[in-house]
Amino acid sequence: MTRPRAYLAGPDVFLPDPKRAAAAKKELCLRYGIDGVFPLDAELDLGKLAPRDAGLAIGRANESLIRSCQLVIANLTPFRGPSADPGTAYEVGFARALGLPVFGYSNAATDFATRARAFVSERPDGLAIESFGLFDNLMLANAIEESGGALVAVAAPEAELHTSLAAFEKCLEAARRRLTASRTA
Amino acid sequence: MTRPRAYLAGPDVFLPDPKRAAAAKKELCLRYGIDGVFPLDAELDLGKLAPRDAGLAIGRANESLIRSCQLVIANLTPFRGPSADPGTAYEVGFARALGLPVFGYSNAATDFATRARAFVSERPDGLAIESFGLFDNLMLANAIEESGGALVAVAAPEAELHTSLAAFEKCLEAARRRLTASRTA
Image 1: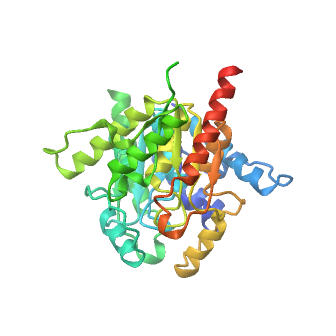
Image 2: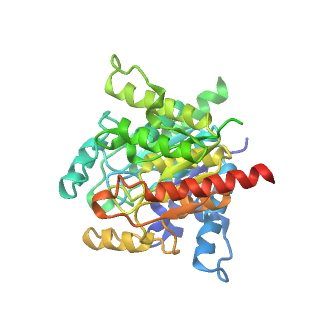
């Protein structure tokens, strides 16, 4: 049986050694019967491109990679602000419109309103804070819910906020359960 | 001829008087021959729902509204961090996968790397900063580019960062030009 392909969305691409991060995630995926697809997998030859064109080429390649997958597992850990990385949020929306199940995890377990209030107390902006008891913006929460995915939030030690794979592994367990259930259904 | 419907994505829903903000944007849209569709237009009866269910219901309604539109005009002004609002980023990804043209505007005209460096200098995270000379995360920039949309960035006075409609109106001009061109093509 072919293993389902999961696009591993997330700011992990910005880690100091993204190839090592990719390898660690892919190895874990295999233990759960899933082929992990990392945003850097396209192996583009960007050497001769102007920076702007290189950035856009990566965007196109990531969209193609998502289209080649059967599900998305997104790292929705808060990134430079109260919310998930916006590139990851974009990819979750993209996958959702394609009809893919979206699984998400966060290495922070606080709710969104709590984080947003803390942020805004230092930088007031006069705008309302979404307070629905959800883990992040409601569009992200709804995508996971409506697509039949799952959200796993486990607080990691602060020094491991962007590197811990504990919540990711629990998310893989949830994905395997759902994929097995839909296969037997 | 029927006016094209544009989904007006953005954190404008968090303004103190979102209905007034919606009315102002819709009025401007009409001047450019476009029907503006605001995220609050669904008029949901949320009164009896638990907060979590209310949040998810809004998410579902917004997705339906996007599906009912022919284009998206997204407010991508930086929101509580160096990047656009993640709910808006989600909606741009959703629209892109549906094949809709994505127009975006920002009331800040700095490039993304400059904003991210300023943010990280106060809260170091050890992660790389995307530096392609783009206005925000490359997925957002690519969506606009590949979908045949346009990006308009005009620096607004700081007090009007979330309320100025100057860049929005320029974005409407660009959208009308593209829509007219594709109609005559």
